[in-house]
Image (cartoon, rainbow, N blue to C red; front, side, top):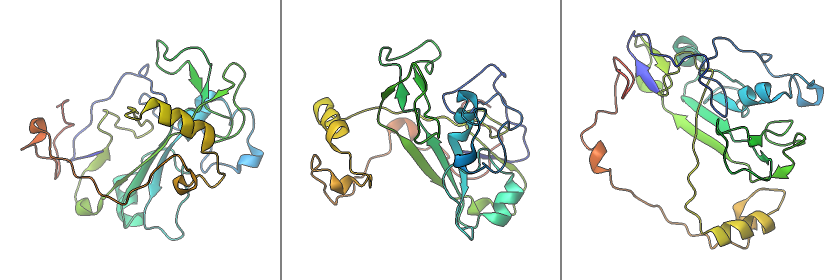
Length: 228
């Protein structure tokens, strides 16, 4: 996410789509706020609706605290400044239903689908093979930009905030990961309940890549990195 100083962000064409959300959207097509899941209709559980419900913009520091995946679009900067004293947490749920055959597809999403309740529920026909669910949470400290004129935009070129994007690159030993998927089934979801892992209380530190050294990553910008 970037902060633009009174500049119009470039946008992708309406046909540009991602697994979760859609950078081509210019309005929201699901109810605000989400109705209770027990009342969801077939329209609420369409793959198009579920893709939009799979992204979240959680206001940090609000009272009472907000739940995950409740707001499916990026609020205005004025709203964030007033309502979110601790910043934003951007959330993304990956599809967890697979067709059981293809490891990819031309649009990189047709081989997978969301379960009926986004994070859980029933897989749709043709995608009955369950795969591990991945949920991303990334916190952004927006407080340094309070009272500055400008707007927050997503660095994928999305000026409206109805799309969000995440990638997963696996560095796991495949044997251990497969064993964890089969045996780590405690309902709590706590990694401590899985005997597969030897947990260590250590903090890793990574050196800044040479390519990024000296790059200005702070303060208002006049455009998106790599775009303007």
